[in-house]
Length: 462
Image (cartoon, rainbow, N blue to C red; front, side, top):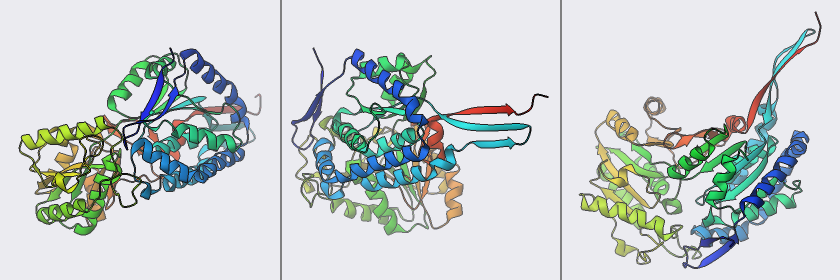
């Protein structure tokens, strides 16, 4: 019996979309077609590959109105925010712009006697296992450099954003991308793991949970398949005594609450110098109270439902446990009457928190943030590092040298000063500890989907 993969809409709880999952045999056949198509794709001039990728993204932009509506139904983001096209376009433009220089041979010697060089060669078939929270952006991070570098790509999207892969395939196919170079497949976890175990792919990029990343590592064990794993975070913010208070409140609260807190690099814990603590908390409470939780199709809604009621329940449980252990909630849920006990969840700020509470240690991935008072940079550093994750940190200070000094002590992939919750395509997106391994974007993003190949050409025989 064919298994159906379903997207349950957080807006109204109905089955919004469903698709039949491929059997293992059908999935293997699709990968075989991708592998067969790869050499011809890699042989095409780089400029042609870039142009086709850019045309695919342009077609995706033409679908914006439909995509924004679909995203609201699939994962609850308010339509007022207009999808993910700013980031999609910026990242595509940057990665396209650096492709020629990054993929060009590194010439060691080109003399009458020898030509010695290092080239970058496509890996082969790249699998992208994408998440639902920023479904287009996270796919683009790997899709664009993988295709431009000459790989073929298999995309498996999360069930919560079931239609995203179809839209991307539609856009790229209309641009003239050759058949089988980019395929969108509906796969169950067991079929995906079976393909990895069978060395179907040359590289797998996965964005998701630590448990999911561990399953992929186990499946790939002994296959020597390259892996890129971004497995979440518990990203901290630190507000030093010389910070711009209003700017810190506005950015950190937005970083904690945007997309209902469902951001890999969202702010989940904040440490504030004691001299600014009371004022920071007061202003943060006012900021959050001004949010409106509601139907994502309502133009006045600034906060939509979480993507699934089970995700919201995790946040409710963490919050309730913290309050029972002594944390103080500062937001009255009655201010958000649309909180239905399901996917619609009122935002919350907690004080009197500590690191024994799950809400300060485990990933919440929802609209809740804990705030702690600190007496020094050293105390803030200790607390920021007291986490199994290391994706980003956000440091608020007027002194760039101070931020760099603090940042050098933080176990993290990215150090932000006076901003947060942002990806710069010119910088490598990476993490450490349980956040995973590997990197995307920047020139290093191309290195993830290519391998070095050395040429030692002796032009004479003696």
